[in-house]
Image (cartoon, rainbow, N blue to C red):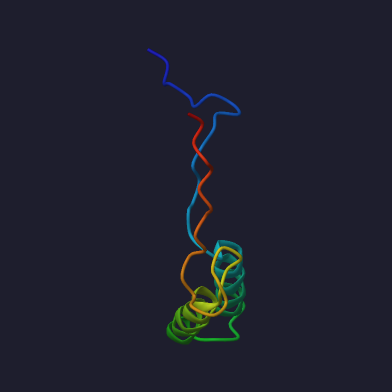
Length: 80
């Protein structure tokens, strides 16, 4: 029996993590430094955690700048 393969172009929810692109860049930079021998592994991972935490605390486009809470969406008037 052949193994089932996922359909091409199937919709996916993907990774739902704020600032994922920034986190990925931080991890890539720090791991590159480890692989190239510029940093010891422990320091590279510790730096990745520290810089990742900073990136995640940055306000996103869906947060208000004053409260850092999600922006409330306006409700549409219901049709009667």
